[in-house]
Length: 359
Image (cartoon, rainbow, N blue to C red; front, side, top):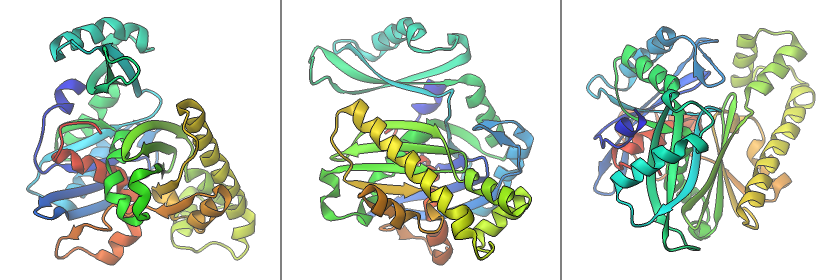
């Protein structure tokens, strides 16, 4: 199924990020001077509708998506969505450079059984040729992506319930990587020749990816997010989860919260990102990360940007993929600036309107 969905090029798709706390949507068009942000929307998700990145209540998620569709557009029905989490597998494998696409597909199907730890009849596969292997020119690097079919079908069903037709099912880490070029304007001029890490800090999942000299080289997901901060507020101040979320977002916490809950969360956050960077450097052989781009709702937690710059010694910016983009008339630019870091996955998915490839 993924092969069918991924490889169809679509025009003007709404990028829809189905998160555990909210659905985010972005619609982009392409002008003579670059991309144009036509619209965006964020709509809260009922608690329990998504658990561990898996949709538990398709009808509830569909209702949220329907609200997003009314806010964003009534004319564009095609959408791009993404899968993520522990059931999504991506690997770079090495195949004979002489194989054509049909032969490559057949060979991958033969070998997939040993590469993927799930029964093949429960998995949707796709692949993309990358570059000829530098160490062995007789081989080509091939990006293999696999996801549990039930995860794909649940998202397709939720979009359909919300009034959309699914044209692309992507992988969240690929969508984040695709926004790399959009964020370069926020970094010093030499960033395109340096190692740049992108960390999307969601409610329950952190997506880490890296680009060296503008080429995507690594991605990894880990279970950690801003919900941990919210749970600390719940525990420390005896509030409901909803009350804690509202207090966190609206800066209505008790006077001592910086010492009682924020500082401990800062410590854990630094540990998680430092560990992710170390895992990347160890597994890839690269020596260092030069710049760090953080996104997601947790990137907006007080003091995170300055904390990471100081503790990690890496120049850090909070992502705004629309920084250098033309903004359509009528959009609330002040509101956009507040929520832009949360729209990275949706923006990366919207970019699939203009490219048939994953990254």
